[in-house]
Image (tube, rainbow, N blue to C red; front, side, top):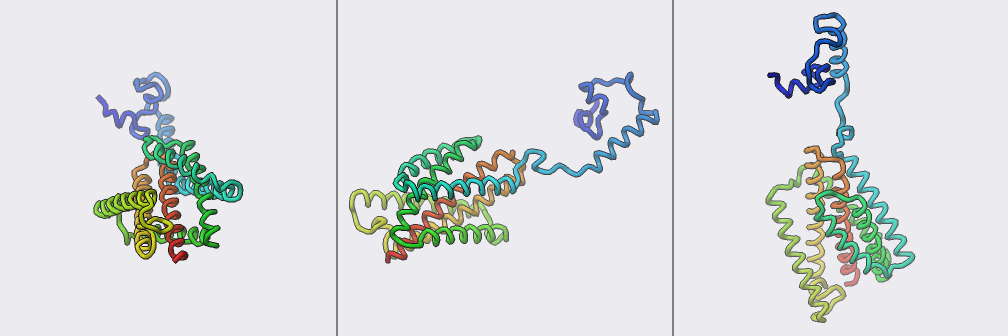
Length: 276
């Protein structure tokens, strides 16, 4: 009995057996001992060895280019929708926030990425960001440009720190970030509840105003930057493990979610600083 691995291999297996479904035949073509068979087999082997190795794109695996293209396209769509909403109907930001939240949860729990749902999520977030940005800009002239520049700067610094290896995503790092994000979520919900019941003051709630609000804002920006580093690490592992190329949509979706969060935190932090 022959080894099935060798028997099905394009290098070690008999090409004539593979063409006939694995059944051995000696009635067609020249036998191995004839000069014609030796020349043909030698030429086939030489062609296979000389051929360049298949790239990840050719094998349908995830590449960094896939992630960059998908993320860049979604960001461009978000900016266009946000600009249109800002100029035409900034009041739609509430609808965009609700739809974006629902689609964000749906995409986050889907096992297979859906390009359509991810694109719709991006459109909804564009509507939300366009309206909320128009509101902030009317109160603080030039604040949106500052927030965008700050977002790009934090993104670049996070990427440099990750690529340099100075910040490593260890289990301890992940636990610290997750605990920090959970604590921040609870803190934000308490602040929102106090605002709804009219307890305390401040434009952003009693727990997000003054020096306390600045400190919490800086903490939130740090958590968002750490989340970006974790996103980069997940993308790297996906590329290294050769996951299917379709998961570039999931990687782009994750980056968009983190960037939107980072932008909103910087926008609010700048507003607190300029308001004081």
